[in-house]
Length: 455
Image (cartoon, rainbow, N blue to C red; front, side, top):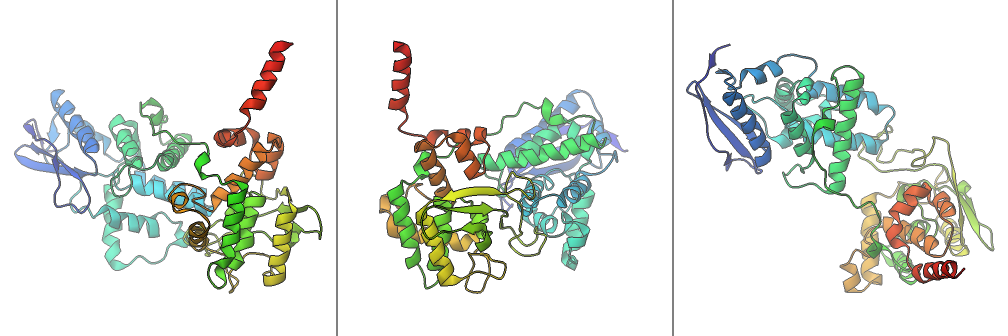
């Protein structure tokens, strides 16, 4: 290794030639200028700080790489690269994961792999690297198609540049990873929920590495880093009252020639039975007890969540899965009011069922996509709500019908364990998520306290 103690540093500068915002660290070793680009100034400052500290300790710098000896040693082959381990991590989780989980894992890794790299020449744009990772490198071998010839150099670059997994033991590298999960692909601050999900994937990956003996311990535990706070409770502003709910549901059938009418009963299930959209899409005629008079009952067995075909087992946009947070063959029983019984009976009379008994599908028998039913819902909001309400969070998503249902049950005085059983929650999660939506209890509670004080 050709070394030098002649090191000079410059201030970080904005890279004006980059398509997306980036910052360039520049330094000189033995008269040869070096540079490395980062997506944020904070990442660049961390790297520059590590270089300065090495120089202060009197370390020799490698003229070829521009790095101090400690960094060169850390980058020697000490086990799998981060990319290699990420690929094995994805392969090990694929069989037992739902399509959406696979997608979440992948998008977290797309935030990490392009930044945990060595400063090798000819780095491709991050969006090009992410495309190769998403469409090829992070898929199990049996799911990969042929890689286009012009994409092969991109894969070869990231394979050569990916840092050794062992470098995650360095606080500098761990902070780079945490800063990476805190950003969107455009370099902007990510939402709190997105940061939480991506950090969780990083945590699971590192824990797997510790379990397999690739890392001695989880370095995340030694880093003082606070993720942005997430809002775990339902926003009461999204919850419609019964009058508003009925007006919204009444507006749906008037939208489009067949789209709205075919979806009306599905939205009704979300409101009157608190079904999740993926549960409604999996509802079959044989799951429904619909008497001519009185209350009926739904027995939920499956869900059909939507995901990109790349992640599903079937190669379709909807995989059939078990119910959320339940064992594979577990079921959920939901009594339904006469209003929903009538709606479902009329829907079956009008549109029949698919061959497997499913109630809700397009005229061609396909499941409704989330974009299709979301578009219908937005049209219904414009018809049923005032302009001020349309601009507000009120029933902004179809899922908010489920929130409205659960909030209604709680405010009606239905015991929390019964609400949790019908909604498919645990009691503690139910009370935490819907704590802000329980209203009108104060006077009653005050009366009980006053009675107790008078005893």
